[in-house]
Image (cartoon, rainbow, N blue to C red; front, side, top):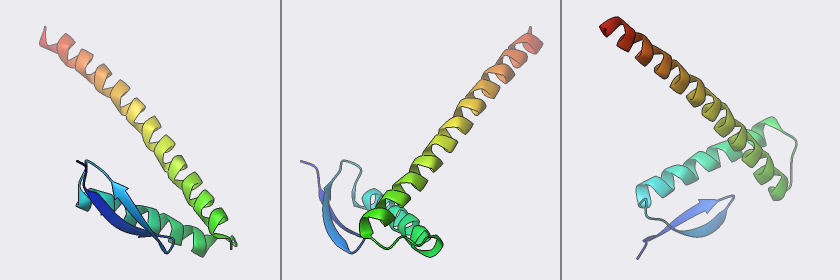
Length: 89
């Protein structure tokens, strides 16, 4: 059975079931809360929904940027591996 972890996001108590454990779930919630605070400081959004949506957009942007960097690094790693193989021959 998955453990249940209580977190607070936007002043709302949430009970989250996760195989990742309490520490991980709380880190994720802390990250989300930091993104929400960032939106509150940098925008004029006042509704909870708008703040949450803007935070979600920022997180999605971070995800896509990171994914793109990972693809580039994987490509570079393959190039370097081929070069190493060629030099080893």
